[in-house]
Length: 295
Ligand SMILES: [Zn+2]
Image (cartoon, rainbow, N blue to C red; front, side, top):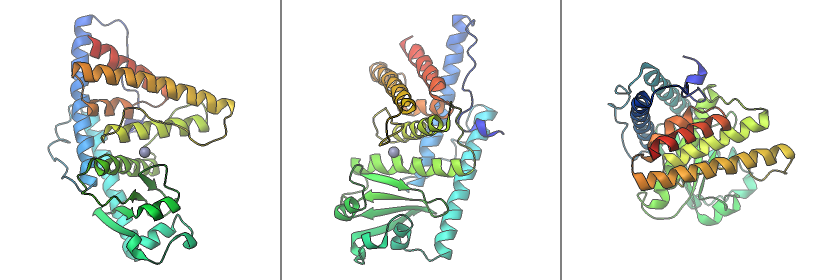
């Protein structure tokens, strides 16, 4: 098993000379693989949010050995990450405040602990729900939730408290979305999140885009993503932003088609995104998906 088998491997060899009948066949097989992988992955994320249990039949039923191995490595990595996080919190007797102190200055955090509460929704998966006021003071105003990933610390998700049920659409979108970022954190730590782009900046931009897109595919999110934000615009950054826009346009076209034809489910797209290692690969995978959906 190489690292590339997880994220960034080549999805598919396009020979360009296959007869249409076998293309149809191949497409069906790929769609089937994609659907199985998408169901497994979505169920895994759902289980990490504490909202459901991982459907144990999904991993064994993955079609190919390669996909099966990929699923197994993801699962093992996530489990190890959970244990590691949980142990660290136990050892350090870390409280919600202690967790927040990994990322924020003491002066920003009130002693009034009614302003935040921590939930370990699954072993080692921590969500801190924060009052809207404090959430804003901690600089989170631009988004309803965010994932904090201290280099050698305990990763956690900050959520702006809304006082509504966790089944609310607000939580339904934000909680799985941020959980994907935690999984990315675990995969990257284990060198299972590879990208092949022109430079470090490009790699960072694409890595963010892929993660964000998967986060939106496993939740109720809009099918588009961002790459680089809030940085000074250099020629290189402009080129990355151009390609980001272009990719989002293609995703929008695919999404419209998906809604019209009802052939594809959102989770069917997770595999192809996972297996793209740069913008070009992702674009050709989206193009292929679009082409096949038209037919
Ligand atoms: Zn995100």
